[in-house]
Length: 195
Image (cartoon, rainbow, N blue to C red; front, side, top):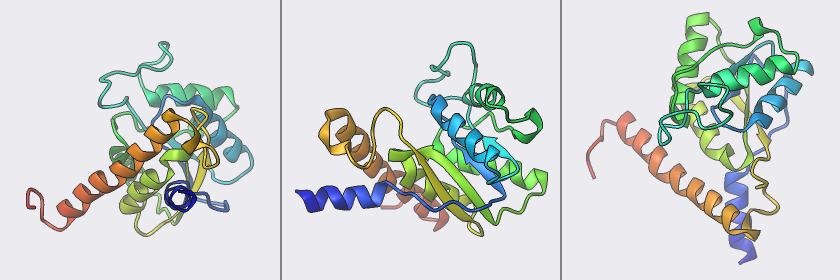
């Protein structure tokens, strides 16, 4: 059993050594700790700007985090500014409703701004790192995407297999990596609808 747990852990929980980058990506979530970590990275000089992305989770149909905010982006912007990041260093993407759309729409924002991303930091939930990294790498194929995982919901690489919640979250992520990325591959190959 230990070998299986280790294989899933290695696949899903990514973490890179951070380097100076062009931008910090922050995919949508209700987890404010992600914005706090991104703010700390900004203060440490890892990147000149932060791009939070997100409207709300597609399945929810509205932002169900802090009721004072309409969108994930608005919530993250508030936290980033509270943490001392200047408003003009926080870029805006407020339409995405799922992770792949976070990456797609973030690409639209960087293209409009004329930013050629060669290296980026992806500040994401630890158990969500593989899927988020895959999507951002698809949308920024010319860039190195450096993953900065943040532990949320108490789930990390050392304990995910010890609770039902952790097992469910991790195995759902594994499933999504296959089904959702498979759909992206089929569409890119012109195989949409074929089996």
